[in-house]
Length: 216
Length: 310
Image 1 (tube, helix red, strand yellow):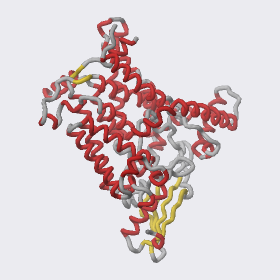
Image 2: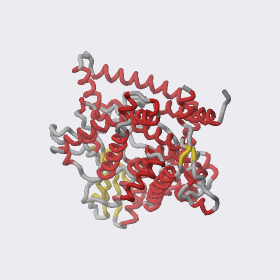
Image 3: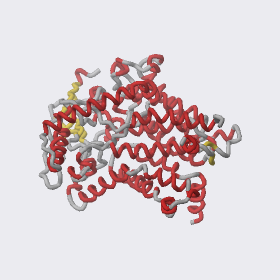
Image 4: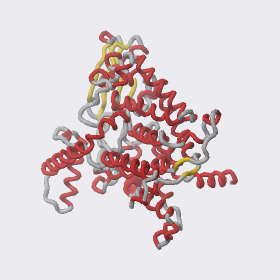
């Protein structure tokens, strides 16, 4: 049987699918001891430990945590080795097959808040995400690429967060000459089940203060 | 086995379904890139922190393209402008293969320079654009018709590969769900939590704490998980329909009803529901733009005929 264009095409598609399959392997990111301390992970740990105990496993939260760290670290390391030869191509083309869409729906989301301090010392909230009374530049903050910069669920924000807060401050200074200080922060919104009492918003995290006197 | 694999990618068909995907996806991307400019985000997203932008990696490890371009706003507007031009060319069908490839290469820079601003749907769109770059998507409803006669038949494999990409995305999204809230220990409360996330919800949805909304979110969570984890069945149903002539009880049963449309319809419903309730930008629309690939051009033509006749 002779080799045809159909064979070549089928081979090429198979070769393209191999790295896609490797990148699509459902292996979670390695969980670190530090990451395990976040409220979201702590809650996950408690619930999964309780489930294992109900299934008859005699385990503690500490044991489940240690096993999670060990298993995810080992699996992620192996996954990294498998992916390594394809990294240059994947980076150049910006392709991937990891789709962790709401893989762990967070129970501790945060609410972006922008406050300004006027020359007379008055402090005013200009923007509070999903608050109809504070909607300054609402469209900007709702845009998906901007949300990706400030929607922090991990222990610390990404590298674009600081410059993002500076852009927000510059926009506020430009809009109102009386504004002397802009405070951008994220307020934790701990979510509870309907049968649990609602919890109040937490203290501001990742607070960045920009003063007009220091603005460029 | 090799013959079977080879035959999966053989065959030709009319180019109209791929052209529909080209136009729909192109329009969604045009909207996104124009939104970026109208919100004053071109310079922040494509410039380094030294030039007032948000990119740290442009200072520490600039990708090759940005080492060739002048610093600051000029580079930002050049990259964005070329991306917009490529998207426009792709949408109207002016050298859509070249346009798709150049767009992917430029768009991939954003993922490197401002990672948080590059979302899952950007990755999916680039995956699909690479397939489209090898397809005959420009052979129908394209401005190329002004310059040359368009082909009436194009390869079927790009449409099938996009279909595989959709199946892979839904299935992998399902099996990568590891949060307790997706499962019985978390009372299937994942959607309930997602809808109350201030960064994601379109409006204040704290009312989901009350009944019957909480139960509806639980039902939505369970259906989402079931729908995503079982998505590969769609390919099985397709295969059984495709090979109907081979006979057998399973094939006869599978050919009695187009079962895969249960998954396709559920997916469409979820995307529309997400578009109404959440702030995920172009995600639901870009996903829906790919849905025409579920139809063979022959089926699409029959459906169009029925709709016009109705």
